[in-house]
Amino acid sequence: MTSRRLLFVHAHPDDEASKGAATAARHVDEGAEVVLVTCTDGDAGEVLNPSAEAVTPEQMPTVRAAELAAAVEAIGFTRTYGMNYRDSGYHEDPADVPEGTFARVPLDEPSRDLAELVRKERPHVVVTYPENGGYPHPDHIMTYLVTMRALELAEDPGIDLPGEPWRVPKVYASTVFTAERVYALHEAMLERHGESPFERWLKRIEERPEPPPAPDALVEVGDWLERRDAALLAHVTQIDPDGFWFAVPRELEREIFPYEGFLLLRTDVPVRTPEDDLFAGLDLE
Ligand SMILES: [Zn+2]
Image (cartoon, rainbow, N blue to C red; front, side, top):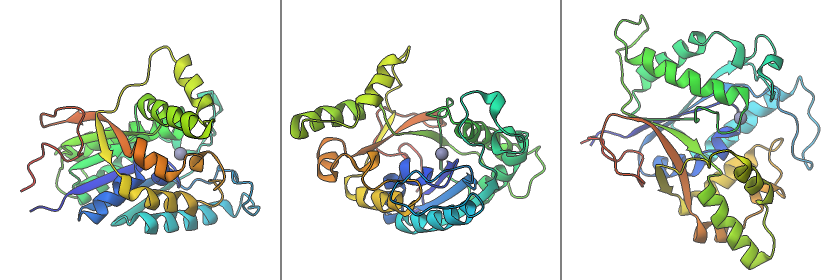
């Protein structure tokens, strides 16, 4: 049987831990080749964990690279690539994004690099972000745009890049806080613990003009939540072990909502949603 090949494209070090990490770990354990591409070095990140030691802006890229390496080890990615673009930082107004950062480089520059990797790795499934970035960080929106452009370039025989053209048959966006997941965990937390960390998220979901789309695929990852947690904790400067990411007890998450959700952006094969397997429908024999 052909080895299953899955490629994740993420914006910053730590996104691989917060979006689809347990799914990545599950596929590694099941024998797939699971490749990670990280677009930026995360150097605009600040220390977000109050219990972490201070880090100067000069030290930040090195620190974040070491954190990423530890998270990669926890998840078990087969191979990783860093595109090393400069982190744009979070800006509500796109006009504030600094020159020379990832979100402002000409689209085809990173897209060609990624297309070359796609031709080399020949993934059956690529996971990126939703068109709106999932949350409106300029680097997350750029990651979506770069991924979709790279897939076009990779499959086009007229594009002069190393490697044979390769068309990726299924493309997904990872989702984290879908309404279904948040409501399920919120209700269970209120019932068992009398309080929930999701009040703010629910308010945001309710304020949106349209509800966020329901996932097209729900991958069962109950046995891989510890690996995701280890990857999150590897990002010492970014993740507070007493904070939001760890506010729901693991046993409760495993019981109530042991899934990671994905939106289907494109498929060459017929699918029945919700899928429970990102490779469903692909003929990989
Ligand atoms: Zn990010």
